[in-house]
Length: 285
Image (cartoon, rainbow, N blue to C red):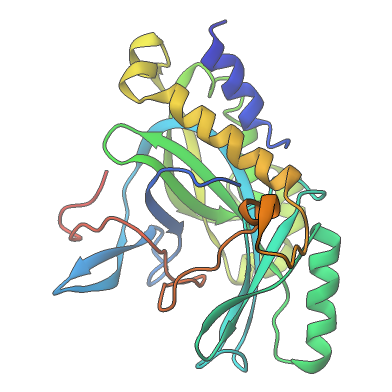
């Protein structure tokens, strides 16, 4: 097996954060009970939210996780605590919180420490919602380069398992769908975890299917696959090796400190920042 296929297997395992070259960010989300993807586009000089139902075809580079917790009583008009991407419980996760003037770093630590921090916060902010965890998918596409997609965590793992044997050999196609406990493609284990709440308020999530397009040397070169694999390796290693709660911005530790988003950057569950935008009648895929 060629080098890039071995590394695809390693990345897709989700096992072990420099910046990756993200061409577009999407979130699987329902609109008027219809599944689709939310993204940002430019309109009359402003960035506005757009919605489209389309399939994304590309190479599954890997996946990570993020967490957030919303309260109407924090920030200027309510807001969420948001984490950096992590890949396993022991990774160093940095948590940002909203203020009237923008987001700031709250703390960093492993998953248990971050969840303990949010538990303590709920004593002073009773309206702080239960922690929401999402999967982040990284799909390398021909048109948009590396695409980041947020989806339901439980269903994300469940659906990836169904294509894992072939996703190192063939391109995958990712689409948005609405959850149904009658869907035979979703495992009984996932349905049990999601429970009755998902039946009453079904989440929108990503489905996967294998295409008949093989990942060969021609595709690898066309998609610049090796460069993106290198970026993803560095991204994962950052989360594993970053020093938690470093207060000193000088010296060697400075490069290990995640930087908060710029003031005014969209940074909540309903918007996606730094995204190339297309009109809805010119969907990106």
